[in-house]
Amino acid sequence: MKLLILTQKVDKEDPTLGFFHNWILEFTKNVDKVSVICLEKGDYDLPQNVKVYSLGKESGRSKIKYVKNFFNLILGLNREYDSVFIHMNQEYVLLGGFIWKILGKKIYFWRNHLEGGLFTRISVWLSNKVFCTSKTSFTAKFKKTILMPVGIDTDKFVKLESLKVNKLKNSILFLGRMDKIKKPDLLIEALDILNKKNINFVCDFYGDPTLKTGDYFDLIKKKVLGSDLKNKINFYKAVANYETPRIYSEHSIYVNLTPAGSFDKTILEAAACGCLLVVANKSLLGEIDDRMITGESAEDIAERIEFWFDISEAERKKVLDGLKKYVTKNHSVAVLIEKIEEIIK
Image (cartoon, helix red, strand yellow):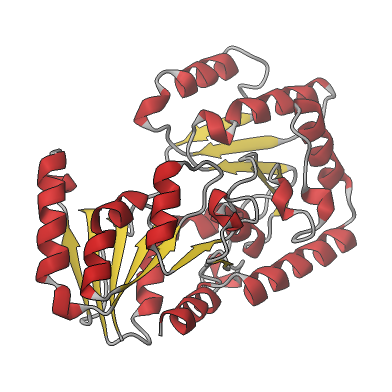
């Protein structure tokens, strides 16, 4: 089997998209040849049966150049692939879909997002199959859509003794993009409630805002530094995906307030590394322990965090063991890529 993969970025150092490097590696185990087209490429370490081609974002911004390079590559590499796997970016399907149909290539589209519109519907129509992980994703409602595992590197995201890290009591972690949709400000409101109840804790925020967020995150940090929370909250820059197992393993609770519509992989990475969870995504009801699902108010979030602070060690171990088994059995990258390859064959 010869496969063409299209994605936004190939860079194992990237804090948001670095995980996809492991997906490509997993594909190479059972695919003879993998060609990857990305908008931007950075640092990667892939086997000889993988070739990575960039549309050129790393050398300058030019949409005309991107489109020209895109058509040159999908046509020039025509004999190098039989099927196409597109990760998240519907623009690739819209640009190349009709050409791939004429060339007899099968199109497999991965999209996991709450929102969608006419262009998303056209992309689904052009695709042979569509993949997503969340039951509330926009694409989940189509007949050709298949629900898939999240794709976690369970060999890496497990609390290993070799990490030699100490899990801090009452330690909270928030890791991800510092954008409004992730709601770091809401967590800070919940932390203020806990602080006023004289509950001892420390909370670490890891991540950077995207350019479009403006002053949103700067204002949050200034507010914290001028409050009673300044000695209980720490802000850190975003880190590469391969650095996060140590960070997860240092914390007791991972908080993720992204709403339903996607199944944030960091939730399962944290669980695999021994974190209890406080998550706002209601689509996870029935998937993980329902006590880990929080309401959408600061009071609800504070109540959930305090609940997990107060459980016994025996109950903590029981819950964490169940979480790790769930992640390993259902959402490993090996299980995911095996399922995709069975459909693509």
